Length: 259
Image 1: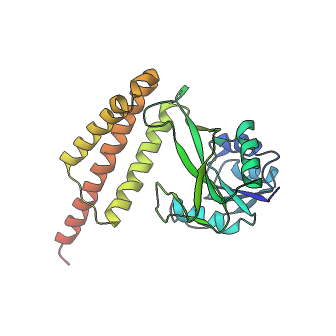
Image 2: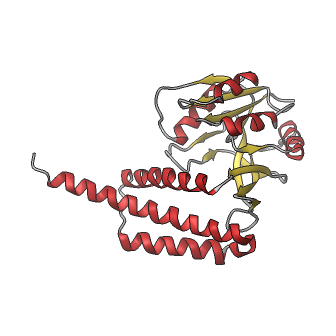
């Protein structure tokens, strides 16, 4: 079997990391973790799995941080995971078969089944959710985006069939925390790219996000979680645009200040 390196970036993932790494048993020959100032038991858990660990002093964003982890991978193949994701036995077997007999394929997209506050979401735009994660080292890099990064493969991409499990949100406190973090990072990224916003645009995009999730993408079939997911999507979208508008307002006020 070709050597497989698994790469992760972490920050205070004590609650997730053990189950994630345990799901790799018999699959990964190398585990690489790039950690950002964890203060819980994350590093101790990583050490029990003989992971290669580095802790850079800065936080450059999700894309650059994942590229740091990729630079440390030595396997012929690389699997990128988040700490809240799990490899099932069926997916493990499929990954082994894929890297043993890849044909012309240098990157595999893995379907992801995500958990939201009490149930796996099968509609709402969350399923099917194919993510490019398994690739031959040297054929792909992560985008330099500070948030919502993506893998950029250069070769042929194929899809696997068995999903990995993604325990993205266990409770609504986690949802609210992530809305705040990601809307701020997205607004800062959009501001750096010169994008504009307004209060009206924030409201309209938020309303459309709810309609798209709950009606167009059949979120109503996901029960009460589908409804609350549509609301949280709307909140995240609204705050992303309103924070972008606020950044421009702050920049204008700075320009008006006497030198």
